[in-house]
Image (cartoon, rainbow, N blue to C red; front, side, top):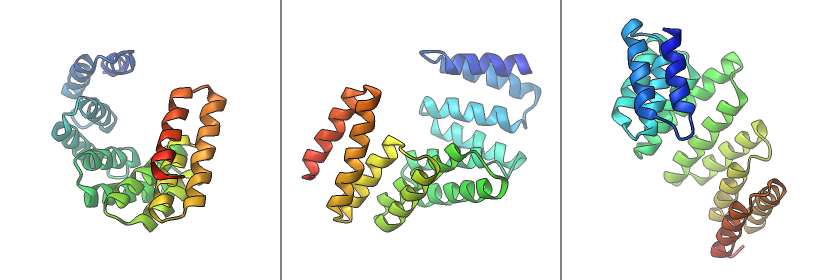
Length: 197
């Protein structure tokens, strides 16, 4: 079984990824142990990457039946619901992931992603205050995360906090310049111009 999981992971992490081979390897591993939550999570991710969202959600749900305290599986479910624009379900899943992560001292990067993605769902439901609070929390966990800085800048602009929006966007552009990512830097500059910042 370990060899099948490894085979699936190698196919998933190749550049470019071979998702079909990864799914096939994970499926073989699940033939050996159908209730393995880690393999279900891996195949869920592979299905998600190929936009087979119903199959991805099915695997995540099966994984949660076996391991109902998996913050990783709840984040995956939240991502699927967010992609399907089922924002209330996404918020519920991200909230559960955050709660579980707090209880067990989960991975701060996963926690930050759950806060960030929940902010996206809240913003889609026009809860800008909630979105801002979640982005602040995500940036506490993962300071100087450029996508979250930029996203928080957009939320601040929606709240008509133009100075705060400018500050976040400028910080994002400075980090992109330091990293040599000139295309990303230009994208943020263009967005700032469109927003009149």
